[in-house]
Length: 211
Image 1: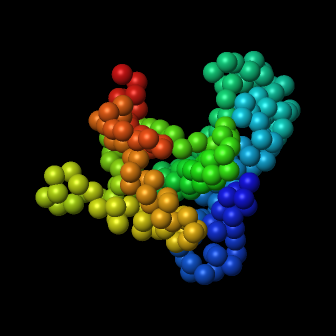
Image 2: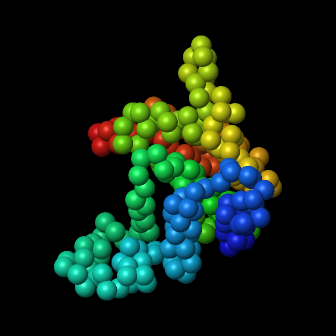
């Protein structure tokens, strides 16, 4: 798609990397982002019902012959696109997450502008943290840090999306992404209560989801 042609050049194209002078994704982040796009949009070949079994058959067919793996990946719970990235603590998983959300958002928006409903992409996101510390970090990343004495108000200018906009978002799409994030993030207490007509970024912690 046109957004997918544009974004990797912005993120990891050598001319853009040189121009940003240090504000760039490291090699592990770059690999995770590009692998997700490759698996979902390129290897998936446009199929909205692309599954984990399909992905194995494309990239690691021999692995399906080991033990019970074929039966496992054929289970109903895996009958949808599903990707996992193994990244250590402190290696920037949140930045990978934000880049992939921007990829999904801009593609869904571009398709809608053309009158299309491309089921490969979405404007509906749920971000689940393993605990309260990471949950608060995610709120900082998307909404900005808490304002002192601000009664829970957050300063969007201190969010990752705003602080590192030169890395995350091409100039032409910046205001649209800012508007989406500012208007559509739901904290765990707002999920199901806050009206977000054109999409959602629901942020919660695992314990609340499990309950």
